[in-house]
Length: 203
Image (cartoon, rainbow, N blue to C red; front, top):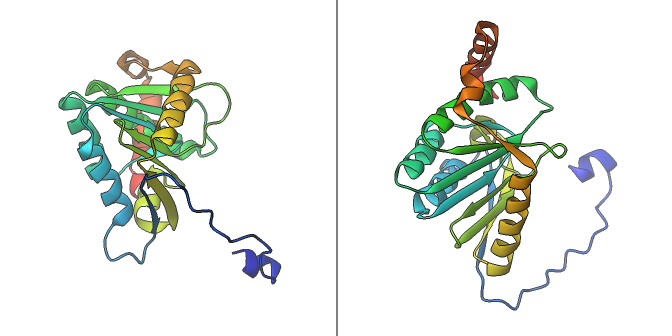
């Protein structure tokens, strides 16, 4: 991309500093040319692995049904599933469509937090005390099936502790949603959210 725009090589230090820890990391570079739906499968696998908690922060939540089902099943088996989303978004259609999923999640015991201290654009996931995931992948069909994305999944304990502290702070700077927040929607709001939700496969 850089070369296409600038017509010159990027002057950068590509030397890799090898970590001295015994942690493991896998970097998934996913896209439409994958033989398998790697982005979706990796997310579902991590969610299915969880026994204690799944904490997710993501700005665009219009997930494929298999991902929706995986999160609901995790909550049903007693996992602490929490999702941080923005209070406002740069993509209004996505935000409207997302409300349908948020209401469904709340009804199944998944906790939803709307981040209120600025615009939230992080894409992270914390699974138990075992895995920390960070990358460019949104919880939507475009990231799962169409876009080129990159995600790093690590077992590094220091990273997991840092992400835990970061998300705990984000919860404090968020407003927790309740099912009642959606039950008071007007007819116009319900039509708008469900109309936008029809576009979920292409958002």
